[in-house]
Image 1: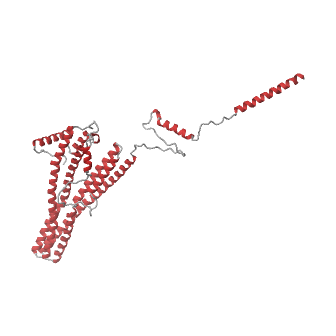
Image 2 (image 1 turned 135 degrees about the horizontal axis):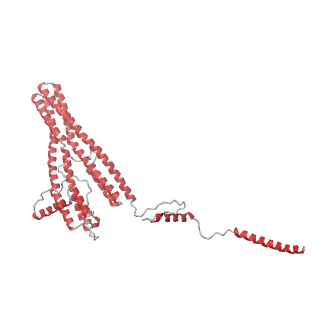
Image 3 (image 1 turned 30 degrees about the vertical axis):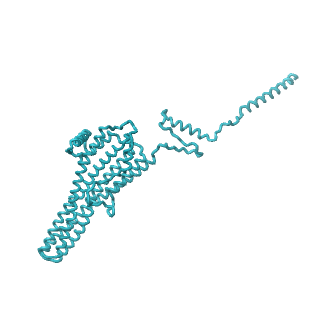
Length: 427
């Protein structure tokens, strides 16, 4: 009993000590550490940075330009930052100009078709009226009748008015203007697409393209009243559909020095060759088209005056009456129909515009080559080999034929003779 009583304090002491240790163990196991002083105010920012880093080296291959994200915003919306060298705004401007050019192509195509229809319909109408009036006048001469003479006079008067309108506006020439405008706008459209496909556009590309569009608008206006080109100018001149280079710009080009040792495909021989080509185009091709254009313009003036004049004479003859007057009216009416058929059916106005456009083509080539050669900084020029190839293709020649032409031009300048061929083999 005493032993049990002696052992009980031990048990109680041991149990109390084990209970205390158990309490300490439990307390230690559920102890929550105090928060560290590391700031986690924006934990998603850390995750986002890690994500961006992983994306930048995706698949083990780093991007050429790392993806830069804005993670400083409170709402943490991820937005890409554009590079300072980005030309998105210039590309957008060039696309806007491209849309305007495509719209102009459609407009000039539609109006060209309309004015070609004018030429056909007006010609048929005028000739039918003129021939009917001439026939009626002949019948009035054979069997005198006031009604026939009155009908003939009325038809001749209407034919005279319509013939005057046709001579003034020259529908065939109007149609050719719109065809040329459509072709040149399509060419500009291809140039813009090439710029967008090959490189990032610059501010100068946007300005030059805009200037080209406005120059084409001035050269080939759409409306008739107030803006129509003069069909019978005092002097025949070539068409001009490109922006002119100002004198200040030419002088600034002349003052430039070579800032790069690379010649960008250019050589002294190539420059001499291009200058020789310019001389041939200026003295042979352009002068020939200006000469032919002058001749056709004079012919067109004579025809444009003759047809209304003859129908007017027919009207005046019918006013006098008598067989002789009706005979004169019939003859002059037949002659007016022939002249109208030759002028508008043969589209003499279209030939005038074609020669004007061809002379302008050679003028453009001349200015382009001279402006390129005036640029003293070779790195700002178009590549010499590419430029030579373009000139050869525009003239319908191979590179060897182009160089042969340049040698002939140089030899003719030395010997004081004339080159025996034209620069262009296309037209």
